[in-house]
Image 1 (tube, helix red, strand yellow):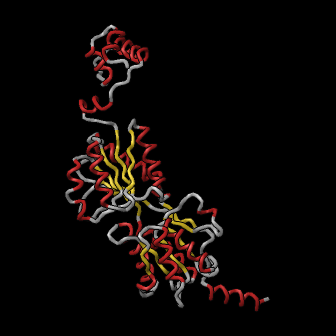
Image 2: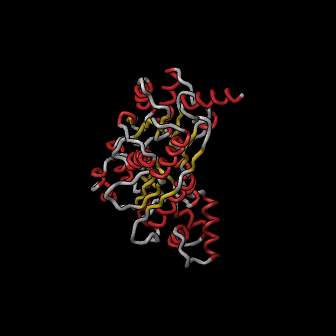
Length: 348
């Protein structure tokens, strides 16, 4: 393998000049720079990335920890982050915590060992888990999707409360008064905010919050499926269900199919998070879509601003709006729909 000595010999310059070109030293003349670059091409020399990082304190790598790589939301955000980082000359190291803080903590230690320049994190733990953990990393951190109560960090999130409230208001407008909810772990900010939006919409409509209509699906398909079976088999089951993430929406849809109910004739479904294929369901699934491309790009922009010392002294929380996609999985409650059909028949 070619070495820096070979490059210097081929270009007929000193090793110091080659090093200056590799490190972007602006005091090297264009004539010498051209000779060195041609020599690098002729010899096939590749700078040793680790050695250079030890010298300049940068590895040009970003750590990314997502909570569930099988979740289409996480996949879309990770892709956006990778695209934005690549455009800036950075490589992304991706880790999947699987909603397990113990696993996440292991990966945070790996990021420190690998000397990544900064970290983009979707946290899975409780607030107290992070009081020492993130400080020990000694690197810039940007949160995505979720915030950590008590820690003032840069974060890119959506307005979960407002988006959830809008979804429930839509169901209320269709005439639903018994609306079930399948929610995630309540130590996570997203779960609390989406449940709060559900409760606010009910309260504004003069409806009493009923804990029996709320099931815990832990942001997972299987857990939501089991919770959904219990919810839908009740004598006085809900006429609509709000699933507060896409994997749990798939779980409740599986339960609907297994029990033999029809959507939306017997049960209406809304899912928080859109995904490829949601519009291809029959009926197409009504969803609350997060701007995944913008979330990923903004996370990288904010992290690089920290690395370049352009972020200012106060961490910022960017709160973005979601988009409500009305499709075919929601309709009027069964009794209201039947009454409307009867009324229409009598007019004829």
